[in-house]
Length: 30
Picture (tube, rainbow, N blue to C red):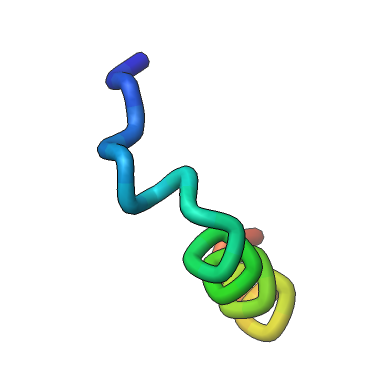
């Protein structure tokens, strides 16, 4: 596993990523 870059760990970025993943959950399931 790669260590995420610093910006990835920023709370606002993490929330955006998590929201994006949740919104597109079906895409990731396939």
